[in-house]
Length: 354
Ligand SMILES: C[S@@+](CC[C@H](N)C(=O)[O-])C[C@H]1O[C@@H](n2cnc3c(N)ncnc32)[C@H](O)[C@@H]1O
Image (tube, rainbow, N blue to C red; front, top):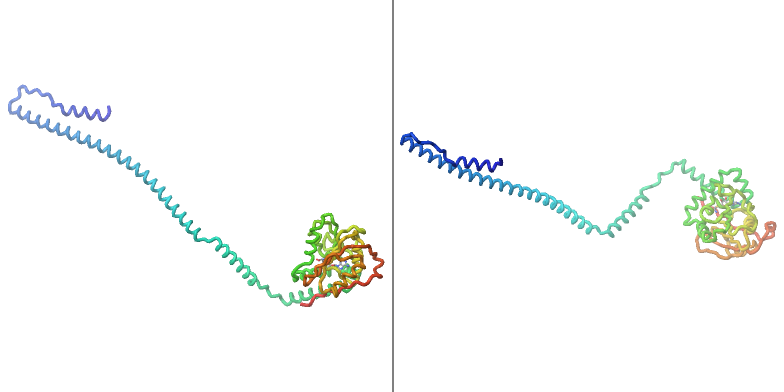
């Protein structure tokens, strides 16, 4: 039975007065009995009232509970919403902060600040790294190396090529010493004349065959797409063919471009130029880069070159240190006739003692 029904039945039972048999009872007891019956009736009524009241109260309580439950639910919902709200608020605050920061960050100003910083750090680095002072021994060694380079350089300018070849064959270490000194010298120059020649050859047809007379470390061969035959007195690497460039192993008339970059050294310059004449095809190009101070009169040099079978096609004398010239082979001039030709000489390029 449900609780509600049980409650109602109980109420009915309570409201029904008991059917009592009053036969044979005296008057006094009758009134007493009636009085108590009346009182119990009143009590019953009161109880019923109370019950009704308590029932309605409990109904109200139930209602209240339901209400408070839904309120709770609402509160929970509200809490969740307010939590979400506060999260959103934090986000919003963050975003506005970010916006403000971004507004304050002037990109141009930042990049200029960065540049300034890099500049100063570069300057600091330059200033900061004072080279450790050399020991007395190191200074002596550096001086010895420098004077050895100057000596070898002078020998190369003032000797016939066959003698220089013999010298370096007997002491190949001297050749490395010469080249170490030469590289230091190149570093002191504002430019390397070989780079000018490299750039001009890069623009030439890829099928051209190049001969590099006095190639050093064969940088030209490393830098251009054409086939380059590289010659020097000592082969410092696989690209270099060791020989006196007055007599190369090249076939006659097979070369398109012959290069002499700072390599017209020795007392027999005529031999080198006639070897170039031999290996060059007709109309082949002869490229010369030399130290400006080596030429007494540049026009005299250019004129003399015609006797060796070359006509000047281009020259750049604008550089303070180096002269650049191109010649075209116009005719074959045989090596055996060298003694009949006017002598071709250049001043030696001697480096100063530092
Ligand atoms: C000043 S260096 C220049 C090297 C290279 N041309 C360059 O520009 O880097 C001159 C080079 O010519 C070479 N040389 C001088 N006379 C030579 C000769 N008769 N035969 C071969 N090489 C010679 C020297 O040995 C030296 O390596």
